[in-house]
Amino acid sequence: MSQTNRRHVKTRPGGTRVTLGAASHVGLRRSTNQDAYCVLAGEELPPGIDGLAAVADGMGGHRGGEVASSLAIHELLDRVTRHEPTGTARAHSFALGPHVEAVNGEVYQAAMTPDLRGMGTTLTAAALIGGALELAHVGDSRAYLLRDRAIRRLTRDHSWVEEQVAAGLLTRTEAEGHPGRNMLTRALGISQRVEVDGVTLEVQPHDILLLCSDGLHSLVGDDEIARVLTLQEPQRACETLIERANARGGSDNITAVVLRVDKLPKPGQSPGDAAVVDGAGHTGAGKGLLSRVIGRKRS
Image 1 (cartoon, one colour):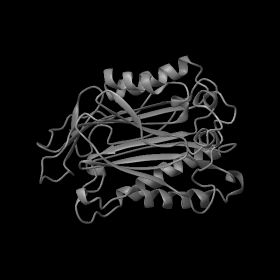
Image 2: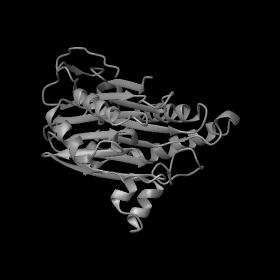
Image 3: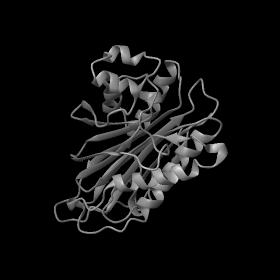
C-alpha cells in the first residue's frame, strides 16, 4: 500500500528523531487515483527542516485531477528542497505558505492546457522545524495532531458544507451525509491567487501528526483515528485506517501520512541532524527510510 525504502544507518546522537508512515489506496469505487503524497526527512531537506509531509487530492475530469495533485506535490518538493535557510530554525525562518501560493500558480498555468482545463487540487502540507510545526492548507484534506491520546484537528475544510455548519445552517450530523459535502470553496489551480491557511505550533516528543484526504476522514471518525494512532506504529496505523475506510465502502481515493516526533534536539544543537524510523523499526540518517516517498494510490 505504500512505497518503503528500508536502510539501517547509524543515528546521529542527540538529533531530531521522527517515525514516518505513508499509505494510500484507490478505494473501491474509483477507477483512477487522483491523490498524491510525500514524506521526507534528513539530507533531502535543507538544513533546519527536519521533516516534510504533504497530501494532495485532485479534482477535474479525464486525467486533470491526477495531474493536478501530482504537479502540486512535485512543485512543493522542488521549492522546499531548494529553500536556502536564513537565521535559525526556532526563529521560524521557513514558512510553507509562500511555497504553496507559488505552487498554486504552477497548477493554474498547467490548467490552461485545453485537456486539463478546470483541474485543481487540495494541498495540506506540514514541515517540522526543530521544535515547531509549520502547516499550510487549502481544500478539504485534513491535518490532525494527536497528543496525550487526545486528537485535535488543525485545519478547517474549505467546503460549502463546512461554511453552512459554521453559519449554523447545518448541524454536524446533517453535514456528514449531505450531497454537497464534496463541493470545495477553495482549491489550488482554480484562480491565479489563492488564500492559504497557515498554522504554527510548538511540538512535543511523542506528538503524532496525521495528514489525510477526505476519502479517509469522511468514513473514519476522529475518535477512531485517535485510537489507531495511539495503539499502532505509524506505518501500520496508515494501513489500518485505509482498511477501515474501505470496509465502509471505500467511496473515494484514500491517503494517510503520519509523522511521529520521537525526540527533539537538545538546546543549542542543530535541528537538521535528523534520524528517521520506518514502521519496521529500522533507523536511518540523511537519505534514510522513507526519506522520499511520493505516491499515488494503487488501483
